[in-house]
Length: 368
Image (cartoon, rainbow, N blue to C red; front, side, top):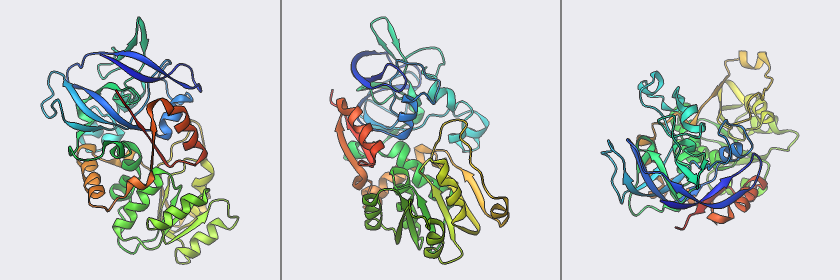
């Protein structure tokens, strides 16, 4: 099969639109015609060389589309199914068997090696040239791609695929961190550091839990205004020199019960801890480059405060993502308010807008 794909030919380069050949689906794989793909900070990290996948490469890990063909052993999906593609896992390591597939021991290889799940074949070529893909076992920046059946989730036929493309990573990560990890009770105070897709998904999940107050922190005033529209009780600009004291006052004086650090900046983790009340928990979901370190005050942690990490919402994607989609369909998770659509060929513009803060969630509409 031939398909248009956004290809990265060198680290920190620009995406070029190229025609590639897509392999046939192997055992436990499906071929998907991609209708839309979200763009995530992780795709930018891949562009910038954070991961070992070699160039030329096809990224994209928030794909939504329609199954065209299934490989041997696939019984739960069929051609014509509308699907989204999420983070991959092997299903048989200790963490997968314990229900923590986001910490799958094989996940780094499945996400970033550039190879299919068998560990030795590639999904894309251009003539005789191999194009590394299988990014998160999907590479959804290609108009036709291969995915593992395990990380491909059937969705309702009438659901808008160009909105659901925001769910597999960004929405899953933020909402999952709140609903699966922090698990606040009604009336618990909650702070979101970062009002991007992940931060907004966490804020909306905190609203569903009945958190009060809900405080959003970000650098961009337009995002803070939207946060107030979507349920934040109060907002604080991250550049405020009195940031920590102001957030603590808004949270009741002693500080917040829960905080989500979704910005991915080392400079944001320290205040995310400092705004907590004793016995409060800060959850780090924003990703950073390898080797980035932060300093924390020992006395602050000693007061029962917890800093913990979370990968992709610690969710069972086959169970959790359909639940989030049901909440969206019911009007309780208005993710459409975050999305701005771009043509497939405008991927460089979309990423630039995202990095500049003018777009919260960029979603590519992919035409065949």
